Image (cartoon, rainbow, N blue to C red; front, side, top):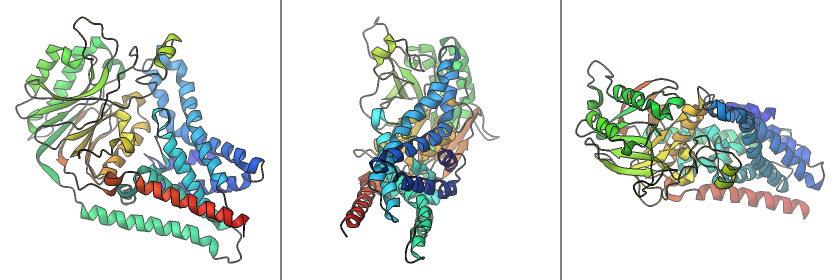
Length: 511
């Protein structure tokens, strides 16, 4: 548990990745010791993995508890179950990884590869089972410094997870007993050499791709820092619209003319406590705000298309592109919904038992049918990602049509001033590096940012700040290896490591 808790320091906002040189070798030694137990040490290794996972996920995800105080009268009592229950569930996957590692275990440095392959497989499973939750995957430890993160353009998050475990667990071999005392140094020396190679590759890639901008595209991101009780209160409609309109048209400097400086105005996820397109006065106010040639990209709940007079009980979490005359140019409906936040597993049964999701939409939100690019006038089409859709690498690596940028609208106001929004930004930035696409991120309470296709932050607005962010739109670079082939390189790394470990075990049994 202590090793797991200390490992969280490798993630944002701390990014102290060298701490893993201390914590990951502990895992190797504990699995070594598990071999003295029954059934080949597999149950003992699994239990070790479970406690490591619990130590890692509780301090890494404590901020989820903030969401249960938004509507405290209804949900506050669930806080301990969320803060401890979700980590308890996620730790099962870490336990599976440790158990599998023990099945592949050897007595030499090969066991480090066995652990790397096993934890990569269990982390992948965590990112896909029951809709998936790959938050704080181990690979994010190498997202800072920026040159190290560039390797994600080749092997993606799961490949980075494999390298993270293999590199930082390697010092465990320093205590191995071998006839040649120099041999134990080979694994950690190779790990350090690999970090150097990654850094050199990253530095070269950064130098080859200076930030360039899309001609004529001027962004204005509005960060209202609105409290959650206002965002979901219809009675606050007038107050919310007044704030959005005034903030969007605020001058950003002596030469600024407000929203007229921008060609694209962007508002965050679920921006309104009402169905935007069903409120004629709100649409008229938006049309009055936008000068000719400027469009608005905004989040909003969207009512399903039903016959007039039919009660609306469910809705989509959507993104609209709205022209200067108030017409809707394009719509995207969120495909990957948040369990317990936007829907309940076994929704009907859970509601009969008295449960409801945090957004308190009866029946849950409706999931969009397909992920598609958003056409935006004057700029390349955008890949829309709402909130935590940006943490799923496989889902954003579209193969059919290449977008020119990623627009990520989110509402991290659920999680207060905590480490959560910093982690979310770090993970969103990894998608930009993987795909070679710039990322434009608009968040209600922050952190809003414009990031170029190799992960440089062009402009940002900090957490808990009300304001606007003006920036140009960075241009995309050619598709990366990961954008072309997806997780194939990561699969090859894991498969090779498993083959090496199995061959070593077989050779040991049949010399």
